[in-house]
Image (tube, rainbow, N blue to C red; front, top):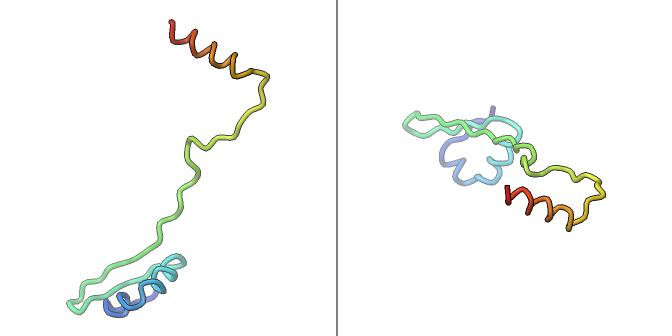
Length: 72
């Protein structure tokens, strides 16, 4: 774990963020308070990001099915 003072962190924020992508970074203030900086992991795909399927249904067939379902 890398440790930076508040002043160092402020002056080297870009470098600090790059380091935080790989490991935890600790920032210490003069008053003794400490803070940890860690990178959040990227979440997986969106639940709406689904692969398509092959079908013989046409746009006309799909719209017809939607209309039927709405009529109840």
